[in-house]
Length: 372
View 1 (cartoon, one colour):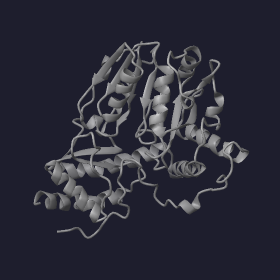
View 2 (view 1 turned 135 degrees about the horizontal axis):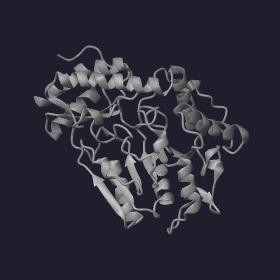
View 3 (view 1 turned 90 degrees about the vertical axis):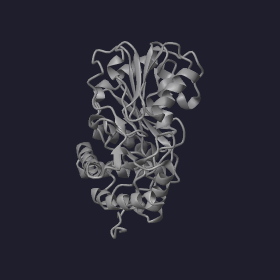
View 4 (view 1 turned 45 degrees about the vertical axis):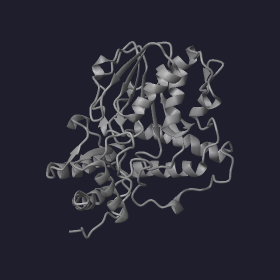
């Protein structure tokens, strides 16, 4: 039987992700729109986006955070092109985005001493094989595989290399050991449901020291340049962005940050995301035709939850199309490079009641697709 109750909010996309509960674009502070981002109000809003983020995340003293172009991809490319080269590099990849960083390091930067630590979708490579005297590049949460790093125990506190972490679907949703991350990147459109096009770059003092003491042998485009005359361009981390940002997107992000504070901070967002994951865990435990792509509960993502379904690829497409047509769930097909299946966002902007309402629809769509 087709279920009677639908999710109030059927937006379960893993990026851009659902807006926060109660979101209203009319409530945004739009006083900076139509003004120069370099005028006092614009610079103040951009600076607040950086300082509020640092405060809410609890970044260690001396860490810098700046707004950079081109989303998380831009922030990661900027970090890799600016910092890599003086040491061997261990690259950990177990899904499409990590594989993309590995390919860029090998094929674009053409570094010689690269150690590839890879694993198939659903698995995590042996992170203990990384070397503390190497630079390490990795994703904290594999958005397209639903596999996350369980903790930072494998990162040596006495390391001499840098850790460069793509944390875009983990920041604000997972407990990150900031003191072990020398570079971390994320984008607004993931965990906080912000707008796209802007990336956030977090640098430790050790990363800044590398930037000021090392000059890459390759040319750097203007939007990648973090130093001038071997000194960090501090303005990037105080609201003077490299290129023109969307002040509407900035207003939207500030609204999301205010919501995080009003709801109890990062710890509460983590709790909500874990509670959302539990809805899917309970469903999987009682339905033998569906399972997690992640082969271990310890590495199971609590944001981009990837699932396998006992159907062929065409039937899975039928299943997701049925859910879309019924407006029960939008955009929950697996990522194009990932194994066929479902991917359901469980970050804190998704309401647990909506996930609970979705579960009977998954059962209905599965049965319909299986019979097709």
